[in-house]
Length: 306
Ligand SMILES: [Fe+2]
Image (cartoon, rainbow, N blue to C red; front, side, top):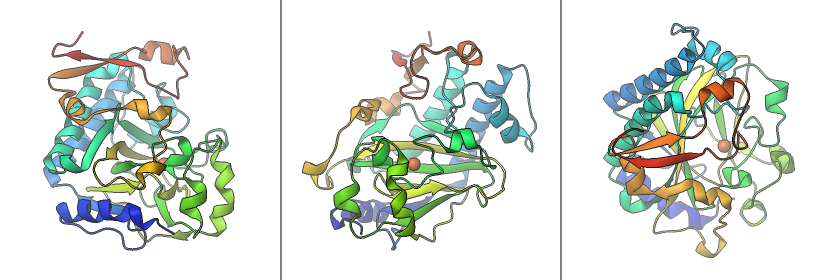
C-alpha cells in the first residue's frame, strides 16, 4: 500500500508539469522532454562515452557503442555506473550542465530541496552476468532505493538515453499492504526483500525515449534482462521540499552527504566545475583511492578548470 502522505507532493509536481501521476502507484510521474532537450542530453551522454573509450585508444560506431562500452570501460561499476574520472571530467561537467538546464527549465525549484551529486549514467548489460547480478545491491533484484540507504524523502529520476529499453528495461511495482511500515529502512542486501516478489503487482509503465520518470524513493522496481541488448539511462536524485512525507520518519543515512544545495548544483558545468580525484588511468589498473563503488571523490572549483 502506498502511504497517502507521499502522494500530494507527486500530485502537485505532476500538475505543475502538465502531466498526471501514475494511478497505480501515485508516486511515479512520466514527463515528456522537449525534443531539443532530449537530443542535447543524448549527444552529451554519447560524447562522454566516446571520451571514455578514447582512454582505451579505441572507438565504436553507434550500433556497437554500448556493447563495446559495457565490455571495455574501466570506470564501469558492477551495477553499470560509468563513474566520472579526471580524464573525462570536461565531458562529464558538460553533461551535468545539460541535465541541470533541463531540471531548471521545469520551473519546480520550490518543490525541490537538495540534488544528488554527481549524477549517474548507468549502462546495463542485456544478458545476465552472474557476478554482477548476484551482488547485494544488484539492480536486477526487486528493491526500493531507500533499501540502499537513500533518504526517504528523495525522488529518483530516470531518463532513458539509448539502447534496448524493451528487453532490458525497468519495471515498477505496487507494494503490498504492509510495505510502508515495515520496509522504509536500509537493508544489508536486496535479498532481504525477496519475499515481496510474490506480493507485488507490476505497474504498466514502459520506459520510453524522450521522457523522464520521477519515482519516490520507496517505489519498488528492478532492472529486467530478457535476452536483449545493452541500455543506457541517465539517473539522478533530489530531495523534496515542503511537503515532506512523514517528516518524523525521514531516515537520513550517510548517503545524505551526496546531496548538495540545488543552486550550487545548477551552477556546475557553467560557473563552477567538478574536479574528480580518481583518474581513468588508475581505474584501468584497478587502483582506487576509495572504495570505487561507494563515494565518488571530487571537489567543486570556481570558474576555471584546474
Ligand atoms: Fe534503483
